[in-house]
Image (cartoon, rainbow, N blue to C red; front, side, top):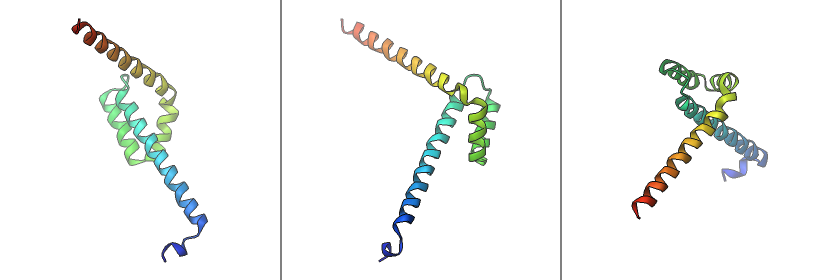
Length: 99
């Protein structure tokens, strides 16, 4: 009987809010991972950014994307290249050990 008092539009709005919240959380986790991956930030600046994003998530995330967002893609690509090289080195090591 509880669902009878919950109109279809309210279900749609609730689903939309949930989707936006999930997308925002994914973005925040991606930003935090980018902060820790970044080699040009000192430890104090990393701590500042993490605290800024945790205390004021909306403002902190937007400020981070505006100030450092342009280089996020390059750091992602660099990290993928490092992982690909490590994987290829591992494959070569395993292939050479079986001969």
